[in-house]
Length: 285
Image 1 (tube, rainbow, N blue to C red):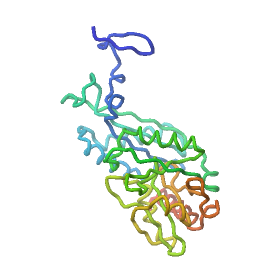
Image 2 (image 1 turned 90 degrees about the vertical axis):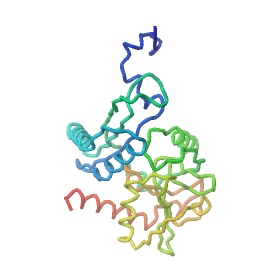
Image 3 (image 1 turned 60 degrees about the vertical axis):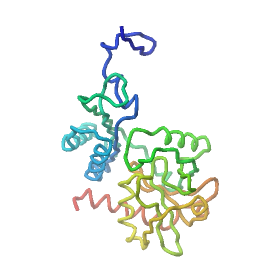
Image 4 (image 1 turned 180 degrees about the vertical axis):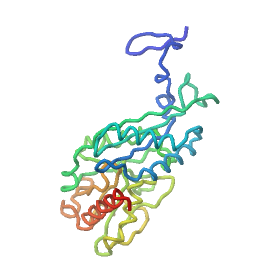
């Protein structure tokens, strides 16, 4: 008899809930998205669903209708009634006995949660500390897949060092992105905003897109090129960008203060411009 053990109890596999045979658990075989709401309105949902659709195509998961995903996200968010919420959802290839290639008749599994976002006022006012960590991820970081063990290890390392985020460094010695964020550097004298260009080494962050769109409003010129840890250490300003927190200043990099340990003026301008962008979109601009 084929059996399984759950919390010490043996059960026949044929009686097992399919959730225990999910390929997301066995292989990380799936993709995910995170959307947030501001004051009860989902933000940039179209862009997130577009990226989600691309991720599904890139790992060859079919039979998913994005219009249905949109309805589920909107329904769950409305039912939760949380003004500032984080909506997480993922799709895996399906459930079956463990097999690398998988069967041809698999039905994708969908999972979603809606949770309240914590207040990040202190982080925005005082900034955060970040540390570096080797980028151990696979070669398709442009796909928002469930394979996040390297990100987990990086964040755990940062936590041990008393930092809030880990900045990943590739084999060439260049920064790719944060373990869960896009990474930016500001050179105040040159009035330049610098971030790594898109490619398979980083995610096409939705928040990153918006930051680049609003940069001109603050008087900054965007330059997309790799940044080294040494350059970041000597930067005038640093910040990260992530869906759940938008722009977060970095005031300490690898133990060294950035901008004398205070939030930089251009970073403040960008945070203000981002808020204005949110309000404009919520107003239906």
